Image 1 (cartoon, one colour):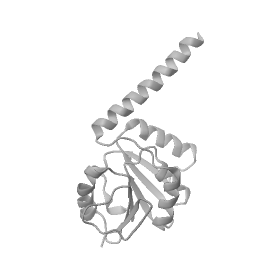
Image 2 (cartoon, helix red, strand yellow; image 1 turned 60 degrees about the vertical axis):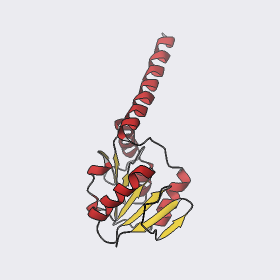
Image 3 (cartoon, helix red, strand yellow; image 1 turned 45 degrees about the horizontal axis):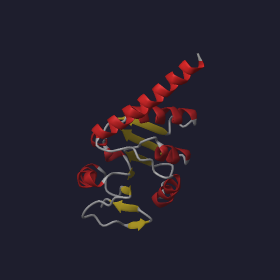
Image 4 (cartoon, one colour; image 1 turned 60 degrees about the horizontal axis):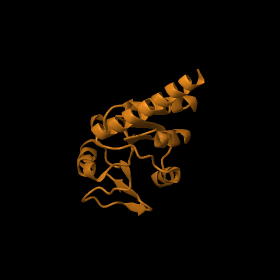
Length: 170
């Protein structure tokens, strides 16, 4: 009996991991969690205030969204991996952050960026040019953008420190 329960649990875990990998492959970007220390650096670099709305594009397990919400800032995340969306929503509810933190099961390409004063992204090099065009088209003037690890091509950052790049839409 115990062996059957362990076998079922192991099968569910393996299936979850397998589906997560398959979804990542077809959605165009793998899930790579941002280190906790970097999240603190993002919060500091952003200088966000509680009246602001921030968005994390490709929010993964919701760490960045949760960190901003814990500071009283309304934060949204866009993620295409349904397993990560479910996990993020579970964590948000568990932490009592409903009403401050929101996760959308939707591609970042379908997100309306016009309502956000800060955009964060841990993208991959292949999307940065197209994402820059989307931001320039949709974001309002003064919007700050923080990218982790990857720079936007032909866009001079306002500040950069330890792999974080801060941009501002003029």
